[in-house]
Image (tube, rainbow, N blue to C red):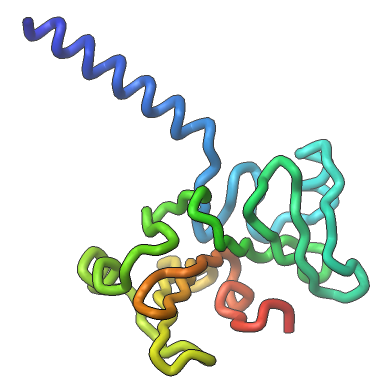
Length: 164
């Protein structure tokens, strides 16, 4: 009986690991094969795909890749500095989903930095900084729930309006 239970647990762990491994997870340092700080042309080469740009005219813009739907990447002076997500299907290392109540986030992460929202007097930013302060994940809350997340290099991760 113990051997059967152990075999079943092993199969479940292997199955859940392979499913999780197939799906990229947003962190303060990367998403999938894209590391924040990487050169856009090197990422395009690695993905074997040209990024679709919103403008391509300035030192800062947002790009998307077919391989990674539901996520936009900020590019500053040719480097990918952050990712923006407003989709429930994109997992992140904090395991905070779009729609999660702020009260639940505060309960789970009492040491998270909570800042007032720039445009919504009732809203907040929930910030998780890397130990060295060079990267961050920012969860934006309005109407009591998380509505979006962005992550990447500082100060880009905390830019409110996107490109400055």
